[in-house]
Image 1 (tube, rainbow, N blue to C red):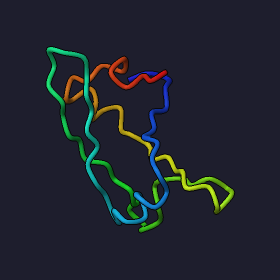
Image 2: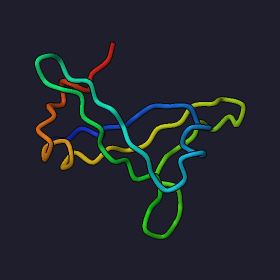
Image 3: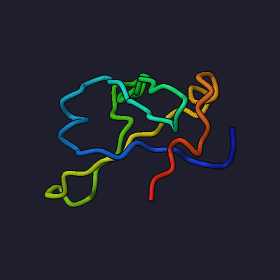
Amino acid sequence: MSAYDIYVVSNRHVFESLGSGGRVRLNPEPPALAQALGLRLLRPDGSPAWFRHADRDMDVAVAPVDGQTLEKHRIPIEALWSC
């Protein structure tokens, strides 16, 4: 893919409630249709694949997104940029 690391940002409690994985809805620009992609939240050893804020009072976390999955579904990196 490239030298980018791609992450989904959400609330920590959301990742905690999903367990081993969930789905992420990507909304590219029209005319492309929205797609739901799988998101693995546990590594093979059972440890979390996502990261929470160091301050436990902060309800925010990030999870890596596999760039090859994006390429497979023809989702350009530009579809993920936010301002």
